Image (cartoon, rainbow, N blue to C red; front, side, top):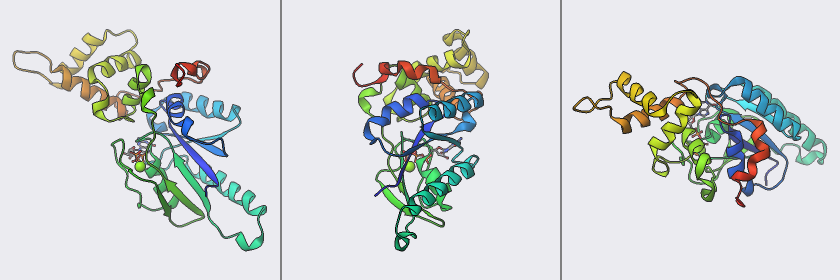
Length: 254
Ligand SMILES: Nc1nc2c(ncn2[C@@H]2O[C@H](COP(=O)(O)OP(=O)(O)OP(=O)(O)O)[C@@H](O)[C@H]2O)c(=O)[nH]1
Ligand SMILES: [Mg+2]
């Protein structure tokens, strides 16, 4: 029923996004879409799209919220439709191109569906697990889109992958320890900094104080993580294409 898979990966964690969802996807014609490029390091995003291309896959960075990068993806989908139509008898030419969106929770699947279709039919929002079932969506244009719930192999949500998924908000807040994730992210935002001191100062600067002059550490950690997620600390990519080679550490056979 599907002509092409769009595999969505968060541009900040492409390797983890792919590794956690890949086992569920058949090896079929697919396009990788790196979402939230506005929150990732632009040079790293180019490196990642180049890397996927070097593996023989098309890859596009698309801001599914604002639409940047969408026209290149639409151009590719139009070309695919033309290619498929060219192989079919004329009576079937009018069937839309059917695409399935696939990827981790909160990566931007429903937002991309809406953008591609020019609608707001697919509910979207800043919370992992918003879409609960698979839905075929139609809009204007030449596409029909299967929006799907985010997929994560929960047996792999551990170690550094868990930190990254929490940072990208692909797992719910009850699936990680905010203090652990905040400390991990301090290392990414300020490699030289001592996490405890950095967070103490962060909380003090934000006025997150308890009675007796102590910093409210839990609130500080949660706010720090949210600031990271929303790009207020800058644009960061948490993994490089070089790490692809080491991905066996993330796979089921670990
Ligand atoms: N900054 C930024 N935010 C984005 C982008 N794409 C989507 N978002 C936001 O990310 C959040 C999640 O978007 P959704 O489209 O609901 O994500 P989803 O993959 O459908 O999520 P689930 O249905 O929970 O699996 C929303 O708040 C979007 O506005 C993007 O490219 N950049
Ligand atoms: Mg959704």
